[in-house]
Length: 77
Image (cartoon, rainbow, N blue to C red):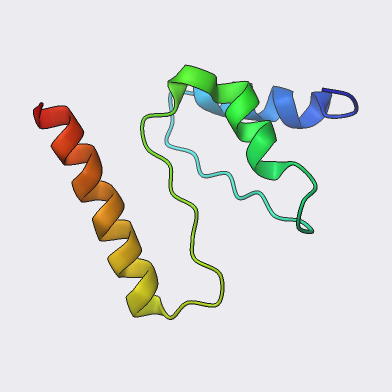
């Protein structure tokens, strides 16, 4: 990826860290935020969820619950 070395380094360092860290990525639409994370972390991602656009908190929580239940079902197989 061109011009993303500082972001790549940050993500790799946070992943390797012994402490619990939170990284928030934000920016304009369609600039490659999701692609960056997926490219750097690849198979290291255990669970991912993209929020719903223009949804209420209740809808977001239901979306999260459905995604978690899908992971549980896959792990039980």
